[in-house]
Length: 196
Image (cartoon, rainbow, N blue to C red; front, side):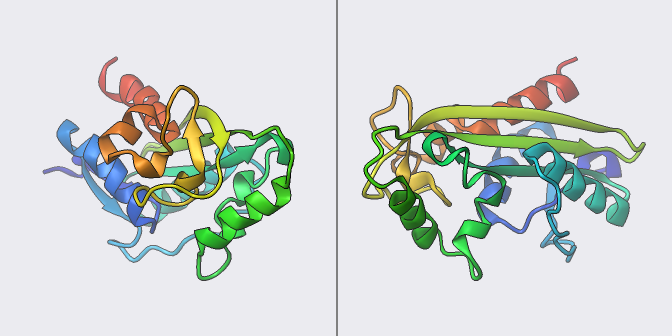
């Protein structure tokens, strides 16, 4: 296997790592994580998903000289002005506790009848030649309460995609992958990188 086939995912999130490995390995990519390579997590100082994804991918590329990808994703709740948005992980605090984060979404929504929300994922792909490509995927849905399901990660137990009768956390990994924001961003990336 050449360096060209080794990509680095600039993440320590096991859920994201497993999701992306399942998609990229069949395409001949040996995906390593930032945790595998003991890479630090850069501080996310940008004001957008695209900015933070690019920052993380470029930092990993500079550290490894390999093709690196980073995902910045989050839950955007319409009635909360798009919050938690780029702060989705931070709403969970340290150590990350998404039960607390989901409760905060519920509490801040209160009795607001507008429960619409979307998961957003932006993937930045930083290549050894210095180029960076950005791909964005979204899935619209609604916030449900109480949380439902044991699968997935993050806010999955309170997010039901439009047209579905179950939350992401109630779906199998394959069902979620067919609908998810990250899968949509990845599909755009794969189409661009592998099918041109």
